[in-house]
Image (tube, rainbow, N blue to C red; front, side):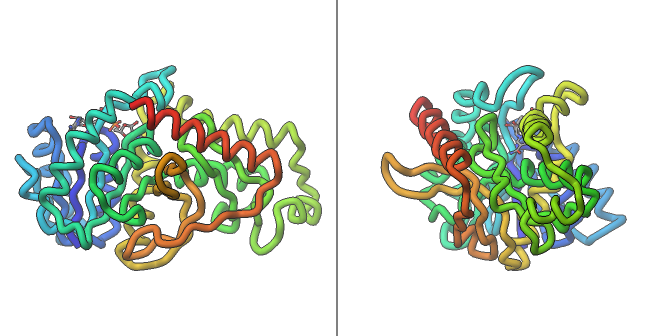
Length: 309
Ligand code: NAD
């Protein structure tokens, strides 16, 4: 499998390392408008590859080098500065996506390629990339709330004293401030979350839930305050997504793809089945009234932001 990564900044470099470590690519091509940065990253990563898998890792001067890519990951563009929201990046990064996607599409096989979008504000960038690429919605996949869902599972696992692997709990909607924590469909093992709490005498009070929601939504702000940017979590999410595509695992992941047509269309995260043909099936979990209303509100915010750019 050949994988191209466009945008080799903090996130792109971490993504390249994580993708290399899956061992699933025989070739990784790195492209950045800052060619020196991309070349240095390819050099460093190539040395690291000598300790793991035999992978050809190169930096590209132009888009011709991405020909034959099965997956193109877009992680280029401005990141959040301390205190900035993802939406603050809207116009800057819309310009970056408008620059990149046509160049990518001129050099890949549109019958096969999958685009993986990482750039924020994620859902709007997915809508833009899908429109510009004219690819089927299933093959323009944003990492969406994969990271937010992982954060929720990890925080819950500490509260419930059970492995995050045994928790099925999703964050839905926008990868941003209007994300929706879906408590109603959450399960631990095969047991509804509320039942698990009763059986194990671990009450999840309204206050505890509110604190968890606050920590999940605030995680990126907190990490950016502490280390200037976030990269490890998203790199893990991208590697997981690549695994599900490359191995045709059909895992259920909360990725963002475009649903609907015309004025009603929107990209946001819902649990979707992800395999070799992309995010082919969307599942709609049972939500209570408050969660459903919050999800509609989140979709409207994404549509409004998309229209504004
Ligand atoms: P960064 O500033 O470290 O790197 C961005 C890179 O993009 C730079 O190397 C820059 O030269 C390159 N670039 C800019 N315009 C380009 C273009 N037109 N073509 C090719 N390369 C271009 O930023 P970062 O911390 O790596 O963040 C990158 C993006 O990832 C941001 O939008 C950030 O918000 C996003 N992000 C998303 C998630 C997520 O969960 N989806 C998590 C973290 C970061």
